[in-house]
Amino acid sequence: MPNLENLKKQAKQYLRWHRERYHPVAAEIRAALPRFRHLDDHQVLEAAFKLSDAQELVARRLGFSGWQALKTGTAAMGTQVKQPIGTPVLSGTEALLYVADIHASSAFFTSKLGFAIDFLYGDPPYYGLVVRDRARLCLRYVGEPVFMGDVRERQQLLSASITVDTAAEIKQLFLEFQQAGVGFFRELRSEPWHARNFIVRDPDGNLILFAGPAD
Image 1 (cartoon, rainbow, N blue to C red):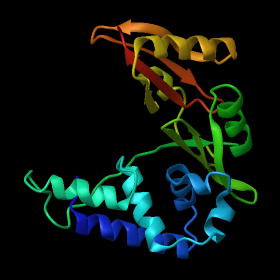
Image 2: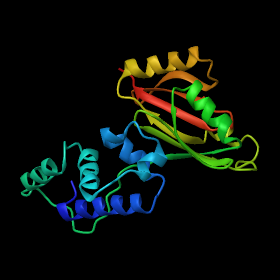
Image 3: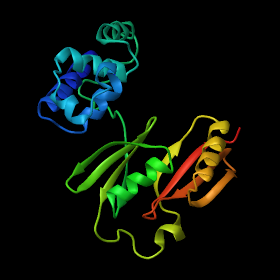
Image 4: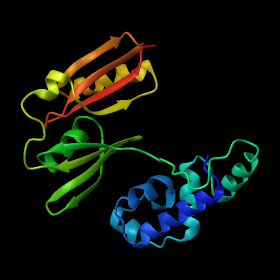
């Protein structure tokens, strides 16, 4: 848990991003704050957003019900080892997939893999984000091949790795994709390290691993 001063700085950064109409922050606001969930990205960025909203956003991202609960929680943790002031906190990561057609790619992820479009940017769009639960995949248009020949398949170069929590979920997910007619690079199998996984090939040849525990 970062210290309270760092959390205050995070809240001010979110507030600044909203004021500057920084597009990616809209998705974070909508995901964390229920009162924004019915709004699209443009509406989120046009809506009133105060420092107290930004503080609530920070708190909810850390699993607290609100800013006051977060402050109480950080105070209760005062006897634990504290993170040095100024240490950056990595709050998330997103895989980046290079695609030849944003619309075709987003259609694949929504119709075949159960994702939803979070946003498409540009006219025509050259960048987008699709999400399913906590999995987030960025789509970036490129007008020429990124990899030469069949190197990705020969060396099994993964573009993304997505995990589920249980053995039942990984099997259910595989069957869901199979029923949707998804093309597999490798079907569901057990690994020596007590995991089960499969690999999906998207329309651009990106290899996406889905993995879960074996039992």
